[in-house]
Amino acid sequence: MTALRVEDMHVRYGGVVAVRDVSLSVAAGAVVTVLGANGAGKTSLLRGISGLVAGRGTVLLNERDLSSMPAAQRAASGLGHVLEGRHVFPDLTVAENLRLGSLLAPNPPESQERALDLFPELKQMLHQKAGRLSGGQQQMLAIVRAVCGSPSVLLLDEPTNGLAPILVNRMVDVIRAICALGMAVLLVEQRLEIAQALTSEVLILQRGDVIGTGSGAEEDLATRIHASYLA
Image 1 (cartoon, rainbow, N blue to C red):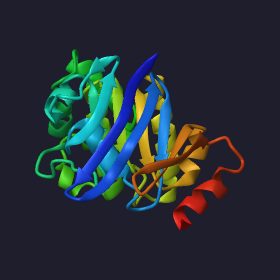
Image 2: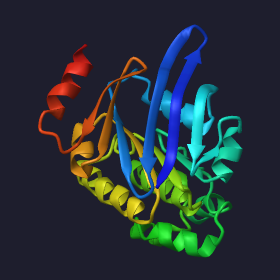
Image 3: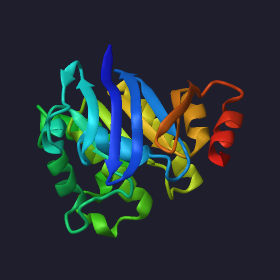
Image 4: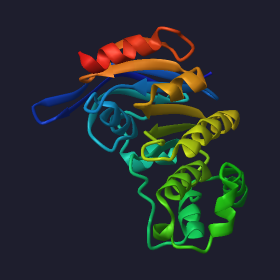
């Protein structure tokens, strides 16, 4: 079953085109990875899908058309988005951050418990201020908070950015666990090895255009990605 379908997404900032007519789909319980260099339009694509920037195109969530909805209504419809740079509420505790994330969930206590199983160590930090956590712990919290809302689709914007290698490897396991919960994941990454570890479907983005597709299981994918970075 297709959880997310995006057709002809186009994002423009004034006279600059950031995303040009990008189409993709993600099945429930699956992950699709968008790869590209800095400035390729990856973040703009996610923001256009979630409604954080004005985008032209069609966004279907479980066949429901979200295209004319503002960002808050898209979130309430089941579209989760973990922004690049974590964006936790630093003056709130971990528990308070999670309560905010679960406001849209049908069963908040159950959703919080299920989400915390992704990073059990956060259970020992519930009363700490989020701003006092390490960068890696804040990234954990941002993801767990989004999962607390029980979204159908989760947009992840470079979740491994700035993480230590051991946490990068763990993030792969977490993304697999999120998919096992039945959520569809649209992942933006610069790290090719993440797509390879997930053996996900891959879209290669360059200057706002999809210049290739493939699979993380393909042996020549690294060559194709590197060529796009240098083009």
